[in-house]
Length: 344
Image (tube, rainbow, N blue to C red):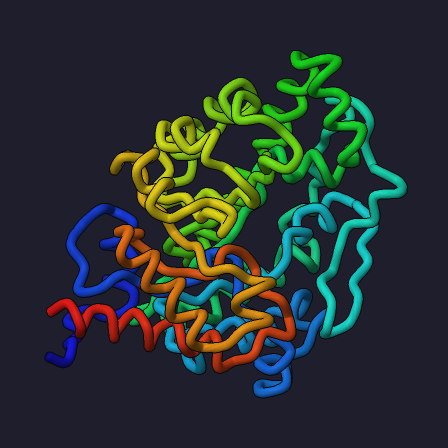
């Protein structure tokens, strides 16, 4: 029997994030799906599409118009706030991600943390908020608009430097917490600005990844802050942390976040068992091996694995490689619909 959809993408996404019934799991990427092929298709290349609202909106819309996903996510990188704070940025070209230059961190101590008075008026803040306004006007009734605001752990890496901040977390946990509580105000400020611009949902990347810190770090440094973010930002929040995270998923499930966007290093069924219905999961199709290097058959197999495990929202595990073939991305919605048809 052919599967028939009964919801529009926006209703589907928001219902799924609220734990309500959906006709099928939404297909989305809470980080982004920008590729060189899509940039060429709509003439919106990096780095300009990261800094110009109209180009940003044009490229972001392809997630819905070309790929058939259920949301539009216009914040492509993880450095917009850091640029507005004064970090030095390597903007690269269309085939590479912009990054923060870590050689000269702008701050050393908690007391240095300061939000510039023009933070929300900086070009790289406006690029996102104005893009959201454009997308809201064009697509806001039919598809979910997903903003993104960096969590304090991610910001700390950028403004203090990864090595310095991680050493601080070992040598002086109290000072580390002071830094995080000061930085969280940036997360709230930029999140609120995107909500005011029309964002229905916010992704909240906070890269306390298993590759660098233990699960206990999440409990000690971030759990309480993430619970506070849920109170302060009045839209569904999707927490994103890369890497192996099964050792902290139990804590993440206590955060109050609407969902957790998880990495392919975590088995879908094991992850679902750990969170035990206390938080919804988004994921977790592998990027470098499957979406970038393999073909539609392997993509389909991973989608089916997630669907069989009951993962509530199907997505690539993180921001996809910029050279990802479009046929592999298009296979994700095809596979979701086929899975639904086969089980009707």
